[in-house]
Image (cartoon, rainbow, N blue to C red):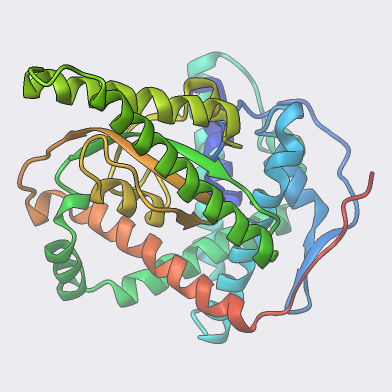
Amino acid sequence: MRTATRFLLAALLAVLISWPMSAQQAQPIQTTAAAKPAGIAATVNGEPIPEVAVQRGLRRVPPDKQAEARPEILEFLVDNALIEQNLQQRAIAVEKKEIDGMIEKIKGEIAKDNEATKQKHTFEEFMKELMLEETDLRAQIAADLRWEKFVNQQADEKTLRKYFDENKEMFDGSLVRARHVLLTPKPGDAQEATKAQQQLVAWKKQVEDQAAAGLAKLPASTDPLEKEKARVRLVEDGFAAIAQKESTCPSKAKGGDIGQFPRAGSMVEPFAKAAFALKPYQISDPVKTQFGFHIILCTDKKPGTEPKFDLVKDEIKEVWATRLRENMVAQLRGTAKIAIAPVKP
């Protein structure tokens, strides 16, 4: 996606499906034209989401992961539809000339990419590869421009400064490294959700009890520093063993290790908030996210430096807009009529 030959595709996808890959890294877009699938994947307040939109997103995903990724892509498309419907009701206008300008920019990127790579791809070829009609592209560009205008209306400097002052950890460069165990009960099944949370609590206690039992076997004369090193090893080994055996996240192959991440922009908010609240080698209580239920083990914390508002203003606005979107979607889903079509075998 980041190579020169994929530059335009990345740009188009930024417009068409900014869906965040949660369980695996995004794969390069397939660049061979495919037959445009028919049918409706879902309806949102009576408005259809075509199957082709889902398939467009699935082209980023390895074939063996597509069944797992499909619900996530579809949920993202539903969220987009809810936001766009709401903004249209607010009468936020987008001019034809604004859309024309964005399309010209995309065509300009094609020309730059062709010059850099000595290729001769056309706008029409890329549209065909992404199974796109120009009307689809125009509609999505309009939706993105509408959202940008709405954010600009809401995010005045006073609002952003207040958010910055209350959330400096998001912008100071601090990092956390963590492991996690993920369980994914069936959506809407309260009994399964309760069972998953109870199981995670039991595993947390199991790790902590095993670590305590291991420490109890050490000689009474053991140096406090050596005791802490032993506790760290016992907690991490015990947690990793459970993650490797039980987690439903692909990170299970690494004992649940998901590496370092910042407070904002990498992990979904409930997960990041919980992870940053932990001390090193402390295990969280169950945390609910859109992906399921987690327990998190913090394995390292790297402090940041005092941020300056003017230097991170763009980042503040981006994070604030993400939170605005999440809050809007949560409210809109409460009254929305959403129907997901069954997947045809």
